[in-house]
Amino acid sequence: VVPWYGVRNYQARNYMRDDMRLGDGVLFYHSSCAEPGVVGLAKVSKLAYADATQFDSKSKYHDPKSTPDKPRWVHVEVAIERKTRLLSLAQLREHPGLGELIILKKGNRLSITPVNVEHWAIISKLLK
Image (cartoon, rainbow, N blue to C red):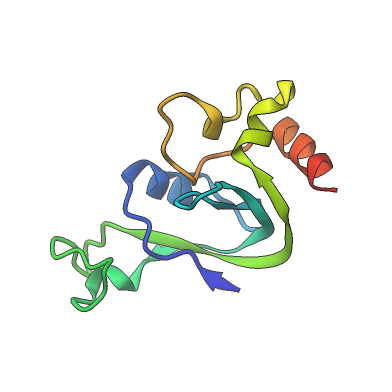
């Protein structure tokens, strides 16, 4: 189980805070690397709470405008289920059933986005 700390994008924060539920599946996605893609599966194991790194002046995730009584940033905890083979961004783009997957939308730069049931099923099949 690991905290998903350091998220500093308001839309991604809102997804974690408002939309993630206990037990929700999580596609572990590498984004800032040579070959982005899905590399593992996890589940939400703890709902959103204040990310302590925002208060730590030595952390690269420090936010001086955030205070313990008014935190700006939250994170969830995820339980790692298993590593998978790399399912690359290019491979995701090639599958016609994933055309509406948010992470594939033009201009999307977030790696934290909702995945609907149909897309989850397709990706799960591709990972087998």
